Amino acid sequence: MEAVQGEEFTLVARKPHFGLPTACPTCLPAYIYLKFARFPFQLAFNSIYPDSDQIPYIEAGTYVAYNNENGGVIDRMKQDGILDLDTELQSLPEWISMKAVVTSWLDEALMYELWIGCDGTSARKIYYSDLSWPIGKILFLKQTYILKQRLGITKENAEQREEQIYHRAKVAYGALSTRLGEQNFLFEDRPSSLDASFLSHVLFILQALPETSVLRGKLLEHSNLVRYSERLKMDFLEAGSSSSSVPQAHSVPSPSSRKGSKPKSKPKREKTEEEKTFKRRAKYFLAAQLLAVLLFLSVMGGNDFGEAEFENDDDDIAYD
Image 1 (cartoon, helix red, strand yellow):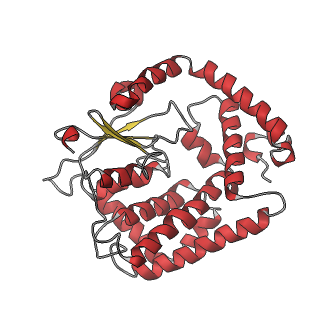
Image 2 (image 1 turned 180 degrees about the vertical axis):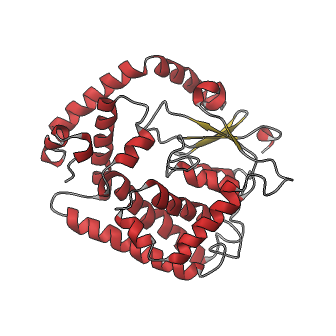
């Protein structure tokens, strides 16, 4: 891509928590993918839009690749010829099936745990810690409601769907454990986007979810998967100077200290001004927006959303 030759790349993600470079389960695979490749990049954080599906995104000069376009950051970089760790692997039937299991069954199980299965503390810390408590709680309840709809969870089938989600996760862990054995990576002793996705999943489960997590318990049944995550974390995420010939990534502390953390592509240029305007009036804008959301859910959600959820304390949110 001539447009990015000589440009410095920046990965814009959500902030770090739980000892992770970015605590967002959507951002972490992109970060790990870049680290696997020893790809030089900066890390910046964006807290302006807590629910934005554009995050993470990577930018360099006028080039920008958003999470919600063309398969996400990793696939976009592969398509654009910038970075591809999956050469020759993505045609292997077993690699394809394993990738599908990780990005469907395990992603589904992690989202269920994060928003529904656990007490919600981790989700609120990752996405809404910069917002006032009322706004953060309403956004949390809204996202929980949306996820239940996406997963097809109702009052009538809640237990059945939970059992199915955890069963699939158990099967997936068993298959991945068998595939891995005592190897360093899942395929051909080299990292791929599959490893980036699965390592992200394992690290998030072990570090961001509480010890009472059902998913955590199922993962810990496979000691080789835990060793795999510890080894790769040490080799790629903690070994800051393991390869002196390759420039290492460095973090930019906050979006306010880096104006360039916003998209720069020409078609998206107007977004920069929108973000600036939103930031100046964030509290008022969110209050009005969330009031409308609350009214909508009160009318349309009925008993599925439940008035009791708003009456409970922050740590005692009720789930259908």
